[in-house]
Length: 258
Image 1 (cartoon, helix red, strand yellow):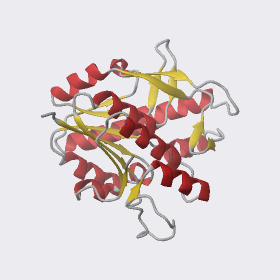
Image 2 (image 1 turned 135 degrees about the vertical axis):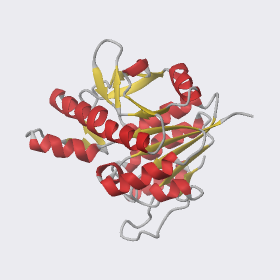
Image 3 (image 1 turned 60 degrees about the horizontal axis):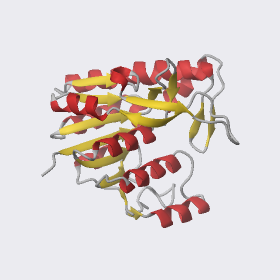
Image 4 (image 1 turned 90 degrees about the horizontal axis):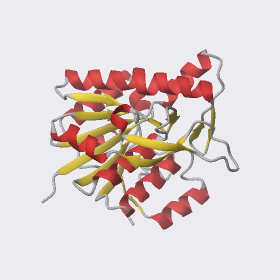
């Protein structure tokens, strides 16, 4: 029987607000067995960019990353946000280690080709160093992964955190019975954004396309669901979208199914 591993991607207001982050880290620290935390931090990066006079451009939930925006993203994601999370987990008895894709060469990516949109220094993942992560987890470490990757040629790349979580799950599910949890401020995917109780319990690819066409699912939720379905197709056993409280309560929220 394979060991269990849980990968939780946390983003949105949860990592921006001290109270919600504290709740998330407390629940995460109580999870037994192997675990990885992948985080975003987009609002913090946007706020710093604004202070520095750098314009933020986002298309379909994905950030356009020019050279100056990459510097801000690296400072915020791989620096402040990552180390705050690591410090919080250490205080809760979890021996965590903060990483970006360049550390231990864990995630390599290629700069996204220019098509109808030039995303700039945005990376599409092409390789995950599963063995390095196996070694960390087997030695009791808890990886905390920031959404910065590298191309193996000396350049850093901004990479969608939902995609990172999905690609890590796909790379590691050969060894582990793996669950992937996308955690943000809502209880799940909502049918009505003004009604917190209108949680959609289950979404398959066909329903996803319908909800996307209707505008019910939009913005940053689109890459989240796309990444989740990709993980399921590659052997991940479960993908759930929930909030911080949902990770400790039987994984309440929205479950993705094929």
